[in-house]
Length: 195
Image (tube, rainbow, N blue to C red; front, top):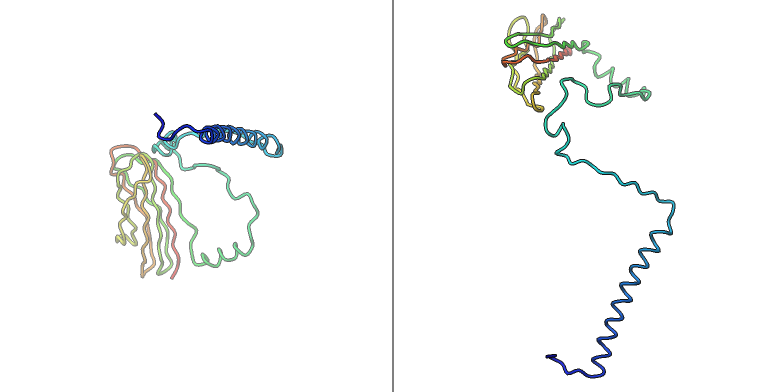
């Protein structure tokens, strides 16, 4: 039973509302249809993007190698002002000593530099094959200056960054010991900047 009595005005209002709804729906569809075909300069390319959980790097499954991406970056010509600034910044630095080897469990390896005098030392040890924290130190003339704290950088990967200052010259070394029970690949980098 209707709450309002059916009058000719009421019936006309219902019919008008129904016609209006049909016209609005039809006009909206015509507008979309017309708009879709008028601009032919736009090209649409649909691609399926894989889920982030399908990415091997997300799952920590990285290759047993150092390079990720373009092995030959920096093909553009260098800006001479940037080169001059770089040379001035590192004019008192020695060329970095880089060592890359495979290390058996319990084995030790070092990257070594001879220092002419007091220096600031910066070392980086990276490894692939275990996420365990490994023993990493910087020494000068056999005395330990600093011991590193490891950071896991992925499944079966880790690294330690160390900085130290020595008041004397002599023989410096960045030393890593494989304290895990598996063979690993290690990269050591040691740089010295004279004070």
